[in-house]
View 1 (cartoon, rainbow, N blue to C red):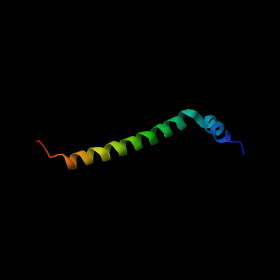
View 2: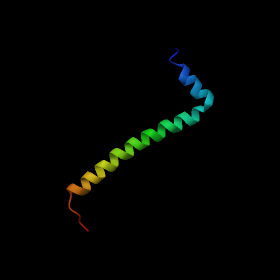
View 3: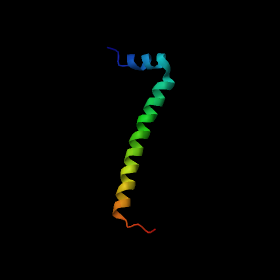
View 4: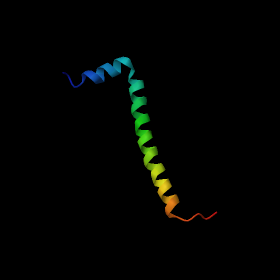
Length: 49
């Protein structure tokens, strides 16, 4: 099995879609980490307002 076969298949289907999927996954991971950090800081720091 050629390791580049899936890449060529993805590029044939549309590399733009693959890039969008990867970007969405990365954005989801970053958002999950940042939201976890936000909730942690919200719970640890007292509310000023």
